[in-house]
Image (cartoon, rainbow, N blue to C red):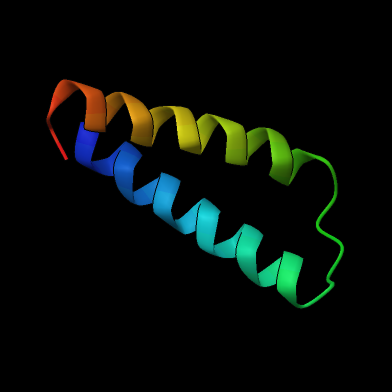
Length: 50
């Protein structure tokens, strides 16, 4: 389950970066998902599961 969350977090960061650099409009929901993705990645790094 943790590995799946990490993969989803990485995918969300990539989608955000593409939309940010490419000036595509993805809506406000991508920013909420990005914050969740960053929190998941930080928790994995802090716990040492990365």
